[in-house]
Image 1 (cartoon, helix red, strand yellow):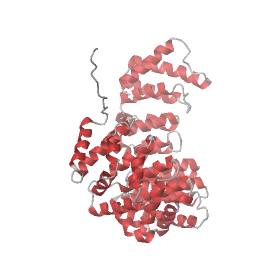
Image 2 (tube, helix red, strand yellow):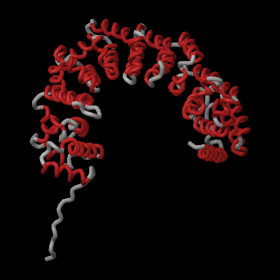
Image 3 (spheres, rainbow, N blue to C red):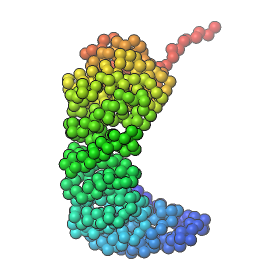
Image 4 (cartoon, helix red, strand yellow):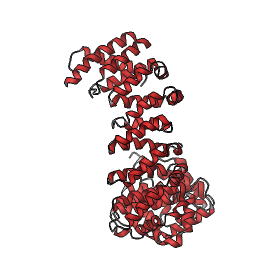
Length: 502
């Protein structure tokens, strides 16, 4: 919201306030704040200068006793935005740092949340200041990360500065005295450094602190730690490599070994499987060092039919993530005989053909991820995907065709998404173009009833034209091009019969 619109908003509030006390907060705290805030914002609207903005910001800081009434917050937030816009953040940080520090140390979590988001929006202008001469401001933000209401916005700001010794020492000192919830607010900063590709070597102590949660006796702490590390490991190769070098992956693997020997596998098993699956996205060849993960994965895939729904989803979602890159496809093919990839794909096909509709849709989505090619399709990758698709079973193309016309939009949408990726491969186009009823189903505009379905079907037609010109019969290609020319939302008009007046 611009300063001008903020002014208008606040002015409107004043007009409402002038009509009586009906808009006043009902709590004792709220009434006291309301009267003080009303007088302050009235004065600012009459002056609107940088000097008055500084004076009023100081008064607002004094008025905030750490508990801003929720009914007043949006008005307060708009006024603070106008004040800081008037002063400008660089001037506030450089010339009036004491005022800002007082606010960061004293004000309620709502205000800190707003200030962190506001600072992040202007980070390019003030990053150098916050990293050097005004690092006290950054440290003040770090002190507030334990507050749940502002923790996420502070973490989003703070990870950029986590490598600075002063900031890191503040976070480490907070970890020593924090409870589990507060510790994980701090761990969010560590996870963001890894996730955003920051220099993890500068925050080794913070990474070790996060990794130490893996050995906690609190199962929720263990789960949260694995989830944070899993998300981070899948984003950047540098993060995955650092976690391996620092021994974090080995610690997780040891935990997986211990859990895999338990009859019920434990609550941590899904989280650990997800971690190693995500690790493979950036560093697939490292999985040779973790055979128990691969054995466990293929075991649950092969025996999906005796698993509950959550474990069944875990099996095929993890396999799909594992195979989602070209390097991963080649790696999986290199271990295909050892882990019986043919049996795994046959199980995948059976899973898509059985079970509740919701599970089938999720499995189709997983298969879509699994076969998705890179921008440039390698012949080797195409051949691998071809062999996997064949492993789904001979009737599988007919099953997909039946799903594409089912009266359930979820499974039709999922099938169209699969077609869109599948038809990057010429062998797939050949297989479906000779399938009885495929062209009729694809060109039938009455099947899809919503915009998403119509657009997806149009995308599939365009994909066929783009990738299959050399393998599609000329008459079929003409029909596809006519569909494309008419667009995704074309409606066939019924023929009109001329009636002569008798």
